[in-house]
Image (spheres, each protein chain N blue to C red):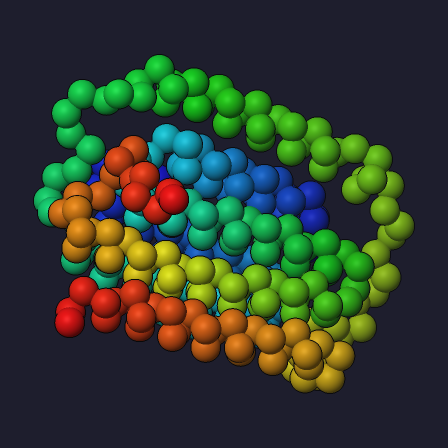
Length: 147
Length: 100
């Protein structure tokens, strides 16, 4: 993320998404790993790389930086945030959780599909409407300047 | 078997990298990628906790998060393209045209 050239950042993000998909596999979430590879590493990153190719005119972020002090402040603040998240994760709420029950086949494609199409059917349809709205909105945004 | 605390620690680190990326960079494309990183970290934590609870509900939730992220990226990139056609430059500092 700190690379100056955004296409390097995009490629590193692809590597990161792939490794997170492997972690999903380790957690027994096969469906989510597949969806991660297809949706993120496939669709979203193609969108990103395409937009970078179209939008970036060579060099970027050159010249004097008006936000230098603010930018230097961001790193200690990030470290502080990491410390806080670690503190929360080590608090009693998360460490005192009961011992995990044996995962009885939960997380396989079959159980996820059953949950998705039976218990969570209405949110599933709502997300399809959301995707359709996003599609129409993107078309409207992209077409306005042509005419 | 990797313990769950490693997953949550990795998720915290990824989220922090995303936050720092949003704070530090000025290129809106990189900021979008950082937002994706944060959503991904949240998904990872969700799946890790769901694995601890032994249910598959968290995976369904993470799937919805993924769908919303895809829609958000599509709309955001379309807005960026429209702004780029208008301005010929991309920098967050100059983007006040969406205020009203």
